[in-house]
Image 1: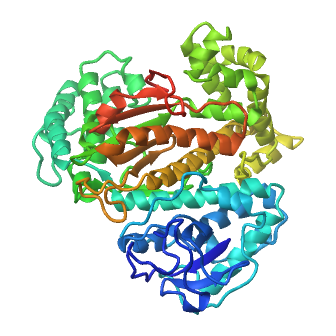
Image 2: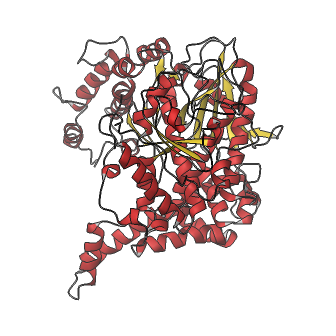
Image 3: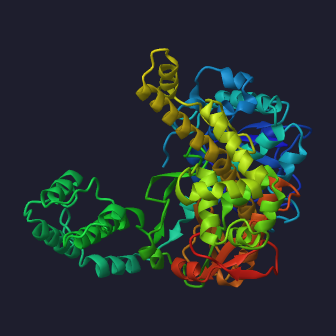
Length: 620
């Protein structure tokens, strides 16, 4: 294993034949010695090797992928694997598996600070080795000896070289001394691979037709208004609401104003939520609901959004890898976490290309079955809709009850149909339901719980601890005891879902990383047109990700093969996490020129070539 600590001033493009180029394929036999390292290499740490070998054996280590990798991509260089020291630091410092490590007890340092904001093709790699093989086969996971060092700094605000090398050593020691080093290695490799994917998706962008987007807006809102004014349809609805409520100065965008106006005409409402207003009989309600829906579209994805986020026919959201405490991704701009249904037709592949859209069917319940090794629950979802399988197993009489009961088990539903179904699920799937129940009880006691690979939950905060202390006071009031019980149940619901949602996020990282590797291995269609940036010209590449859904932009010539690889990568991710335990991860997969059409054409596919397909069900 060779680890390279690099700086972003790389000038060589993808045709470079020397150095640890990310473009070097398995045919590369040698590279420069550490003393002859090119300008992109600041330090090399090797084991049992005097020279840099093929890039497949190299892991780039840097402080922040977000700060370093865009510069490499701008030069047309793709990195196969990396270690993102800041992301890994955060994982290991919080993981209960590393609780006794020096890293866990070290004072706050540069890697605890917020990340700074930054602004001739070789043969495809062999598909015989998965992304994680080299790391999992290497019991040490890091080199032993230090190579030469250059005293250089990275992008502004990033830790310097000495800090990076010291951090690398501390992380290696923390993982090696942890309770589950193999699982943690997989987790940090997946998290770092996710950072590469996020940066590449920002680099390539999601193809977006601004003219179609504008047409949708004009159809729904009317012509584009001058800055600061409402579109015609919103202005018309606002006037109608004012007239019906006899409130000529009402601002329909102000919640307090709207509530006062509704109550003034005798409507006892506590909010303007759709579910509450739909039960109210008054002529102002219909235009008010219509206004709210169109106003959300205008503010979140209107013309201003289009100008800012799609300046060149590509939507480039700013993903935050591990931005949610469970490991799910967040977004720091652009609204990456949803594409409104009405705008799906604007997500449009380049001419001669297609979009392959895939999302995992009932991901969290399947992950739960794998974590708990609940064979009966895994069998219920084998190659089909899991909720239908639960019905067929005789647990509940209809799919809707199976779904609401399972969601209740995952999220702590204690009332209504969810509470009624939960005892049946516990009887049918004791291992799976018992796992989340145990996690909930641990949370209620204020304990830490962890995902399959070792991401740990935070402890409850000071307000939780104070509520418990107040309730234990001999003179505690009923109100104090009620507050403590509420806080206890709330934190139990959090830890109940943390273990499953967090492990599902780990499955998704493995899926992304394996799919990224497989897509690159497919090679390039030299004749494919389009506006794709190097190094992805002519190559299928990931352009969108949301929790359990991916979108791949691919030349038409390999669209069918991409669909196969998307499903195959899902199966590989399941095996990485759960070994030979027979839990399936079917995908709804669609191929079309637009995102809307691909979603419409989606079929449920089991992740093996030539597998039977089933009609995909809407709603998960």
